[in-house]
Every structure is written in C-alpha cells, then in structure tokens.
Image (spheres, rainbow, N blue to C red):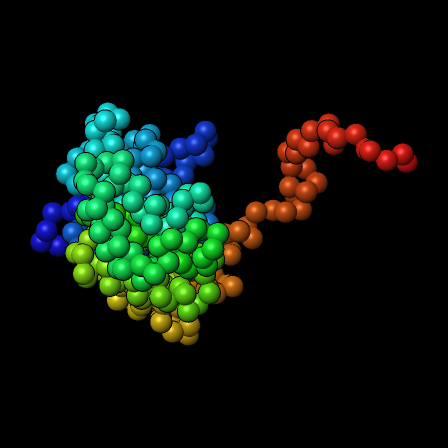
Length: 296
C-alpha cells in the first residue's frame, strides 16, 4: 500500500515459560483500514493484540505503533501513546458503580483539562455515535450485553483515538446484535477515519467488516491478504481440494468450520491410547482440602 503503516509488527516472538505463543509474527496495518486478525482458540491472536497495545513485552522482535517502537518507551511514554488509541474489551469492561455517561466521561476527566460543560457535550456526542444517548443515566446492570459493548465503544472513542482495537466484539451476542455491532464498526471507520484492528473468530463478522485479514495458527502467521483472497479460499470447491497446499486447506477448513481437514487431522495425530496407559502422570494433589460437614 502507498501509505506508511500505522502499526508494524516485526518478527514478534512471545513465550510463556516453555510455550511459544507467537513465533516470528510479522504484520503491517495501514491508516484507515480495518484489519481482522483471526484464528482458533490458542492460536495467539489475543496475545498478539496485547503486544500491539504494549501490555505485553515481546521476547524478540518489536511493535511500532503510531511511529514509535513500544519496546523503546518507558512507562510515561507508553501512557502517552495509550491516549492515542482506544480499546473495546470483550466484556465491555465498564465500571459497574458508574453510569454509562460517567464511564464515557472518565478518560476525559483523567487525561484532559476540559471544562465540565465541554466534557458533558463530548459524552453526549460519543453516546449519540453508538446510539446510547437516551441511556446515559443507566448503570451497566440495567442494559443488555449489546448495549454494554456499544457503551464500551463510546468510552474507547472518548479521546478521539487514531486507532481502535476490538477484542472479540461479537462474542456472546445474538446474530442481530452482532450484525449491529459490525455495522457500527464500519460506520465509525468511515465517519471518524480511524484505523481498526479486530480480533475475532466469528467468520460472518470478519467477512463483513474486513478490508484485509490475517490468520494465525499455532503462533505463526499463515496468510495476510485482502478479504477477496480469503473469500476465494472459503468458496474453493470440495472436489478440487487437491489443488490446495496444506496451508491453504488449513485456512479453508477454518473459514468454513468443516469437521474434516488438516486442523482436525493434526489433533487426531496424538496417540490417546499411549498417553492413557503410559504417558506422564497427572498431578492431582492430595485429594479434597475440605473436611466433610456431615457424619458419614
């Protein structure tokens, strides 16, 4: 693409103990686009997101965000760059003791010197963008799951970020509400000209909102391509499956949710009988740590 990337992930490696969760991941996200990062459970996509926002330090490689290498910033520098992006957490992550309006106002109160009246106007604007202005005085316990997601998005928008990160925005939502969130993501990208990075394994959502898509598998990046390339793999005829290599068959199986393919073959390759009879013993402790309260 002609523009310089607003996010660059270079040769990223992240380990937890002996487990390598990200193994040499490279990715570029360009201004104004919606990049969807997908993969199965345990593929490393949430860990990649946490590295991209600076909450996890890589063991090798680096992330450049808005022109700054995160590994070269101290805590003050990280706090400065965090004001330039917003995050929609999977659960919404609202403060239950605050109203929706107070949740949205909090970043403005903490990180700006704006007058109270200006903050009030800003909160109303952000709530209007997500269709919640009439619910400003309600508490999180009084609204639905979809409304919580929208309220979390309004809070993420409060400081007018250049980049928005979404962690499973459709998780736990019914199909209609999920479609509403997808439309909201697309509308905000157009209206506010923000760059969006969306982590998801919901394929309907991914194919609706993505400009480009990236798929992780076992910590490695399988493919980064425009949405159309993924659509062609998804729709590749089953009677011509031999035309695809193993990487392409793996992507196709994930996109279609097929029960048969390289992913399930890989899982079946572990020898269950051998592990059951001769594998390492499990540490089950010394038994229950609670004494029975009734006589036996």
